[in-house]
Image (cartoon, rainbow, N blue to C red; front, side, top):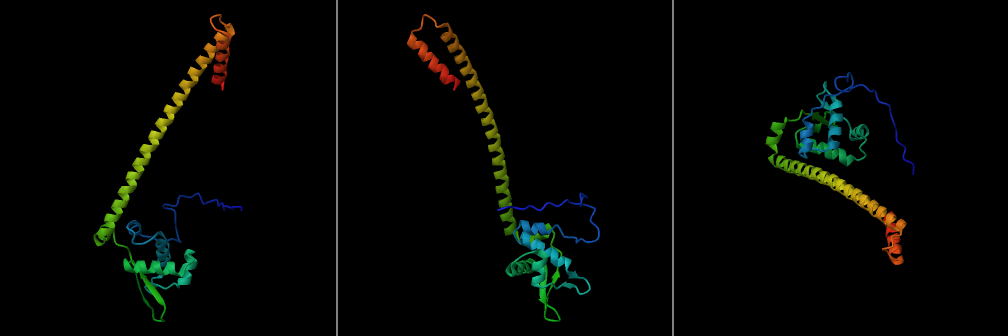
Length: 201
């Protein structure tokens, strides 16, 4: 199976401060809602599209579920419905029936962090535990990595020392074998040659 990767050359223009015309101001406080598990990352995309489709003349947004699915490329009606339900529960939208019986949504600005934290102290505690666990894990991983590097250096030094010792033994054996000293018997010299061969391998 061939995996075709689409490569697109970007504008190479710094986005910050250079977006004009077609943009929406998305409140960054939405990430506080995500951190506390009140909405999901998928919900954020749906919120942005509701905000984009908000009609100031009417005072609400009225995209159909199908429009939201197309705009966000979310392939499930249930996912869109769940996003709208969560928004309603946390006060980010208000849903009601419009004059023609269609579903409409008023999109609200999120609470600031302080206000939000006061509303859901149990979620704040859960998030702080999650954050603390991640920080501990990251610290532990860093310590393990440092230990790994130290162990690797120690193994390398030991290997180098063994290579030096092996070279010294081979050199000594070479001298003894080449000199065929009279102090050694034929069996001793054969044994030294075997040691030399082992050292070279």
